[in-house]
Length: 618
Image (cartoon, rainbow, N blue to C red; front, top):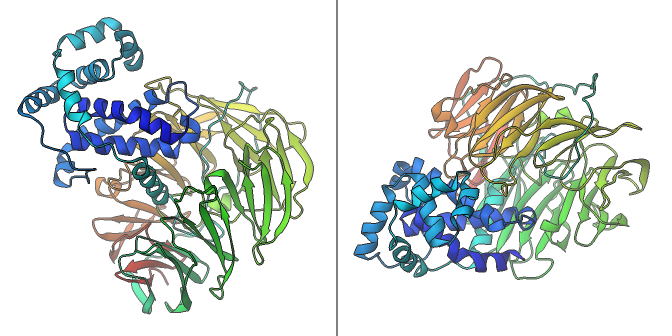
């Protein structure tokens, strides 16, 4: 089943369920649209579940629980509603008012039983309680409740599937990285199927701990003049710093994509802003590298290759080449000389020359995953508010690919030929290569392979946090190098731990909620949660203790280097020295788009209809 068919066949039932839990039809519509947007993002996994609709209901339930917890805040700033619905009848107001007074378990059981027609046994399995408990919950409801709720929810307008996918793409954009340079880490989410491994390595090699000097923060001062002008009412903007060059990009109100550049030292434009050919309904953002600036537009016209990848010369602003592609079907690796696109759908891996766009080499074969080796230096550079899929220039002269048979093979980037090194039993899924090892997770297990001849996969960790439902695939996820340790999230949408491992030994674990992403900052770890509209972030030290204040958790942590961070909250930007935890107020600030492009001593931000440079250190 494809996503469109899934959405059309299940969304009316899901809306009834959400309405039964909230008693608020517009809120139920918004929650349902958000849940389907998240399903669209993970559709490659979700469509393989035994009961994808049960997984979706779990997401809806979690979102509604969160809504209840933050109801007072949401009333002050209501979310946008989808469609226009008539006011509920007097009887429905009475029933939904009574429904809101019930404890959450009773409300959930009533919604599952009356609105979705699940049996007592099915409800017991989904909620994890005895059938007798379910019967006691249902006995407190009224037989007429379901029909009244059905009449109101069935009258509501189900938004078109295009609205859901557009919302999901916007979520993807908010999770993309806004920093650049050679040192931005591309965090890979890992989920695959493996067997239990062997005993831990008694003498595992220790990765190099990332180090850098703390920033001497000072009040920000604008460098230069007006900077780069952008069109009025731009749809979305990004900025990034690579050495002494800053790059900005945007999608205009008419669907045109633009790119500009600034001299970070002077704040002056480096070349006239470039408007890329074509009109695009959506935008997959910008990748800024030392040897190229990449922008990806999306047409949303139903064609197989509905994205267009543009490569711009960073020194001159001239368009070098562009080609159609489907970004969801590709793994992208950006090496200094070539851009490697591993086309999973087409079963072909090709390297394109950055200067000419001509293929340097290509080879055929089924692709489960393609990735490069990461190093500790990746943890030292600026990394904005989020890590993301289009983040880093890749290291070394080799790449790794897992084929359909589960064999991991090393290839030379210069030629596309195998180096002669391969390892069986890799399985399929996502992988993280770091400091000479490849790591892999299943829903319940983490294992690692040291890339030496004759070495085998070794089991490091088994999931310990119970999950709400067997259909929920969120167990072990977000594997991230953090200093000398490896960190990951163990749990599901309702409860989870961030766990720090020294090979197979648990060094610390910290209970978290609303976890979306992890970002290492030296031996500290940022836990991004909540979402772009209501952040709830943590900054964990080397013992797993949160060092942020309540106000800082509601803002945005951003990595400057391995020893320093930005904390944006309450309309100000603060510099944080991780060694002393001293905060420096850098001045009034406003986060726009995906946040500022961060360099070693200066940042680029949008002020009105211009991008300008501000210095925060000498």
